[in-house]
Amino acid sequence: MHDNPNVDVNDLMARVHDRVRREERVTTAPAAERTYVYASELDAASIEALLYTARKMAQVRTVWPHKLSVFPFNVSRALRRMFLKLFAFLFNDQRHVNLALSEAVREHVQLTKEMHGLIASLQSEVRNLEARLQEAERRAGR
Image (cartoon, rainbow, N blue to C red):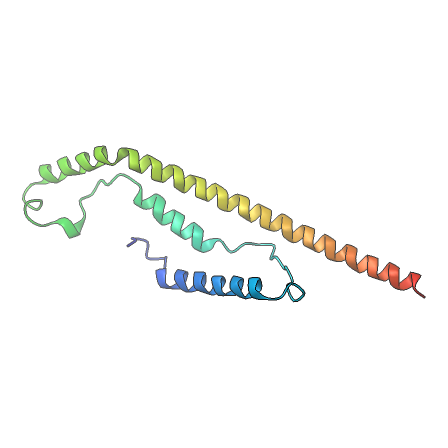
């Protein structure tokens, strides 16, 4: 699971399912009924929370997990330290890959936020131009 008490997985899953349902409704609507409205801010808090958890879990363990304090690991502190070092060595490459992927996703989310803001700005400009065009056509039609 995860160790971050601030992340409610059930809440995140409910938000994802709601968003998917909204997107499905928009894509199944007839073309004439579709209106593309973009909010200027993308709600990426859930993605950022998951990225935080992934980064936290990708760190090298320095403390033996309480769940594994069973025989033979509860006998010797040196044995636990040796296993922690062994696991750090064995999973070193995977940890680097995970951190790189996490950073790539974080940058992608940042770019997506910027693009989302640009799309919202452009949509607003298009609406203003359409309103001005309609006003000009109305005046010319008099």
